[in-house]
Length: 261
Image 1 (cartoon, rainbow, N blue to C red):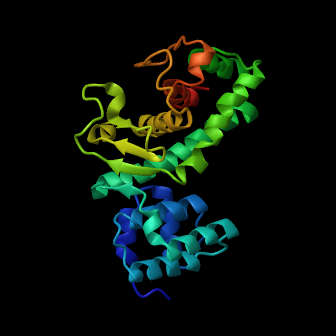
Image 2: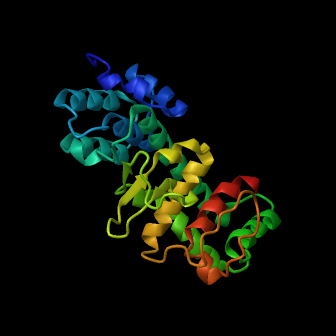
Image 3: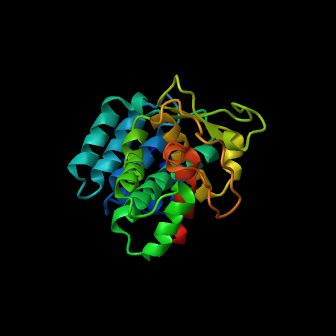
């Protein structure tokens, strides 16, 4: 039995589904998924000084969850061995920490949904085809190009395993730019910086923006080929594919508008 609830864990976890699963784990009656366990760990590791008691209590609670698979057990073991390496969200105030953790979980689901739509979608093909035309200037029939886009969405989740998020408050990389609610520095290929203004956006926009910043990293130094493409509603971006496939805005808008197909 667990002696106490560790680190106010239930109050730190924001995502309702994770909170429900955590309660079951605390009661010893339920299973936590890999993503839920990861989210809980990140909620706990909001500073580099996590104590041995907190690690021990968290491990006991997670181990108490039924039917933990091998991948999730490995994650727990890695956390117990080196909790400091899970200090993934740096400098965030408590409520913003809750939000960014939930956003990352949302972005993982969203990127997977986008990848799935491109091969397994049961939605009308004409709607998906139009979305591709609007964002990447291609059609579903151009399968090689579609696969390039799909591979980027599929790579989001593994890339995020190594990515660190750093809160910068009111500081921006380039003050006055709408796209600078979050940014990357090419010399730091696994860091994403987040400004206070990021949190003024809606949840789906925030999740899609994390995908945007990820594309910057995997596209090396290409920036925004064809220029910044700021849209305030569904429209045609109009970039040729050779630019669109490397432009983070195109992936962001595909993710944001994918719920319309």
